[in-house]
Length: 460
Image (cartoon, rainbow, N blue to C red; front, top):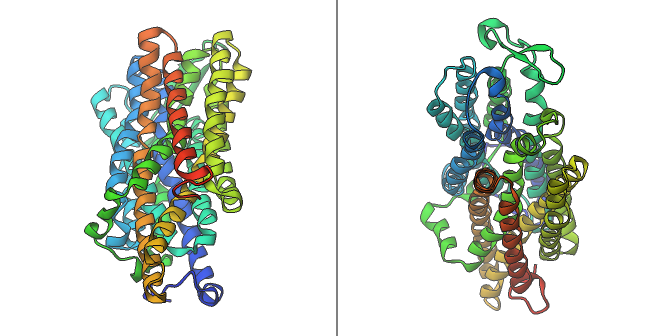
């Protein structure tokens, strides 16, 4: 099959079974590892920052929280632009380019982390460059949404994002292992750093540079796979001006707000999880637990999409926000006050599970909202008008998926920064946590009023 597909009708049952399903699934299963690597590079600092002091880097807690927050800030900003690039460049071309760009922060961090005299400003630049991984999410989700019919969009976006989100857990699981040995030899990994463990009083050597170098070969392989085995869709072509119509859509901005609450919470707690444990429970070995929350959240994201396909995304989203507020008030805050790590860990994992479900449900809502809007406008105008309406809905919803993913990612900056600021001003993260609760309540009200109540404007 040509790398550029000129005829694509996923809503046509015969076409889908004969040709479309196979092609869509192939593009999905190449997109997933590319996105997983993007998340791994994006969240590198969530692990590295917690190990810098062992390597001789001397920074304050506030500076370390900033290093974990900056990739989310740059990644969210890049997502705004990446949201609109698939219809301009084509999904195959842009996936290849954006995946290859991950080599810049991966190699850069490997070089910089060999030397503890590397300046803080250099590390800040590298943290910002890790945002290249965060930007890829919007273009990836936009691209995959074009390939699947509306009945399968929840599944497709849930699988792409859910397994892709596993990159957050993968980096937090793999990094502590690879830095414990000279995996690439002294010429690449460096001489390593000796660290005296204050608990065991034993000296260990570790190679922090491996945290960057370990991703280089997988990135190269994923780049090659996307170039040779993915497709561009001619029907998905659109200029920026064509897509910019979403800025006039009320539901674009409402879904951005809701996605800050779901994905923003997932990526924000992921970025700040290790540092939060280290600051509040210094006796705990962070490496043993930091990957558990993101793993749980990523695994249930496809479940959120599948459940939403059956019962409606808005209904699931409503209950997710209610439960997220309850978990903070009844679980996380009491655990911090009583210094109960078991309750704290269980509550945080519960929070991650809820964010994963909400990520899937909100992304299931978006295509249905815009399809309803366009079909209502084309009602009574004949089959050609309906077909055109569905094509326009596909393009607009793809742009909204990308753009809401961009805005939602700012949660990855504000949550760890909120923790850092709250601890600096009050000595505890309580102030930040109660601010999050207030925000979740606004999300709950918006979901109920516009999407889930009887007689809602856009029931979905």
